[in-house]
Length: 488
Image (cartoon, rainbow, N blue to C red):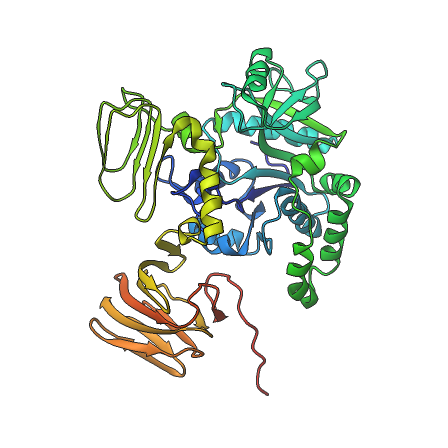
């Protein structure tokens, strides 16, 4: 694809993927999963957009709680992406996220064109995707707000629909062309979805957009004036220390609204390109069969599964053996700390289970027992009132940030490898079988200077053991650190 000098890609990576629980969690969403092949969905998305723009013009829109995991997964491109993370203080739906990204792009390039796409979709035909991006860029240059429409293959009630004005053609040569949008339709009931499918005049809303950054901000100002005012305030203070302290406060006052409901459905500049590439948002467990191979019985099977006479089912085993007998159109997903069993027809309701867990304060909605970090991982082995036990692994050459905790102390025991420990002003080696304690309010760091993975057991004690009880003073992975005044 011939590169447009002002085309940028913005990968939307702030979602939680609640309908893919228990494999996805709030702090480990669907985009970080290996659903198809050896790469995660966000890695696949990155390679897809690199066929359209160079890595230095790819931006990642996400939240603070997901930024670390995304940086780790996109480590292959870390040099190009260092300054290309647009971090929302908290998720406020897609309109604020896109407006914030557009504001940042306009600060760097007043002629920027944005290709906006989710991090967790599966698209198989890269050549056709590139052709659609090429036409979308052409229409964006003409002032249109462009989205891609997907030809429905079933009466889906989980997607929004678009009705284009097919009598009017916008640009394009040969078969691929754009059309003005006549109307957007919210997620329909089954009967309405069946009618849309039969008519042939409706398309699924893909959630992929192309527009000039200036054009989308003009429409935001027209249809979401409060959001536009907030973005102007942010733009005026982009290089100021004053923004750091007040951004979260300003952002929290924004009304959560999607770009579809808040802008696209109200704009007279909206256009749609009917695309013909294979697409799936893998929005729930039943949609997995759209992108994953099925066996002779119509089952999608992953992991250590022993099945007898089941048909048309999704059977997923993470670590343990899962045995199934005589299931029909069911979903069974087993992870180390949670198991899901439901009919495929009810897979959209998994998000309701997540909401119940969230209200109960259950940790299973938030993260897995094993959590990956840029330096390695940790697994929660046991926890209770006032204590938590973890197994921590540090990759060769990896090191945690220089940090302290206000609420907890830690005790480390090395079980494999050699650790380099910073505790206060002391720096020392810790070998297999040796241990050390880290009192609360003490600066500390754990490093692996060896060539083999370091494994330690960490015992935490304190009245509060949350991962947000951390103050960083130095960090190798671009995470926020506390500024310390220099002594004269």
